[in-house]
Length: 194
Image (cartoon, rainbow, N blue to C red; front, side, top):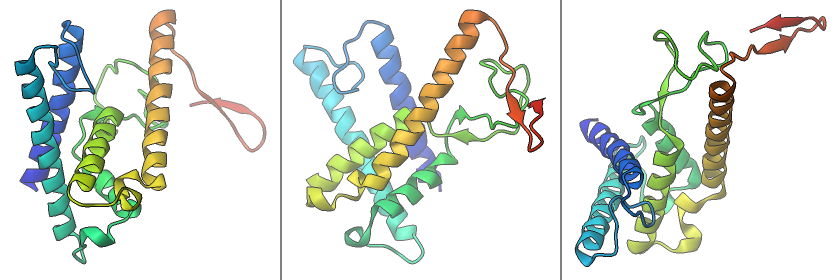
C-alpha cells in the first residue's frame, strides 16, 4: 500500500513540477517539466520521464499480482485498467464537491466538507499515456493494449468533461463575483433551491 501512495505522490509532484516549469518560463515538450533546447536538460527530462514510466509500469504489475484472483498481463483488459484507475482515485488530492454539498459551486469553500479527494484528470491522462507506451515497449501489441481500450478513452473523456465544466463554472463565478444558485424541479413542477 505504501508503494501505491508513493506512486501517487510522484504523479502529483510531477504534475506540479510541469506546471511550475511552464509558468516560470521553462519550455515544455510532451508535458516534460524543464525541457529546453540544451542536450543536458533534454536528457534529464527524458530520464525523469523514463523513470516515471518504469515506476508506473512496476506499480501496475504489482496491482495485477495483488488482484484477486491474480491477473496476468495477457488477460488484462480495459475493465481492469478502469478498476486500477478507480482504485488510485482514493489517493487523489483534488477535492470534488458533490451536488448536495453546501459548497458545490464555490471556487474557495469557507470551511471543510466531507466531499472526496480524487485524482486530477491530468494525472490520470499522463499515467495512461505512460502505461500505454510501457505496454508496447515491453512486447505488447498495439491492438491488444488495454490502456488504449475504448472504455479507458471514454472514462478519461468523461473525467475531462467534468473538469472542463468545473473550470468554466469557476471562471464565471470569478468574473461575475456572483454565487450561482442551483435549482431543481420537483415532480409537482415547483422549483426548489439546492
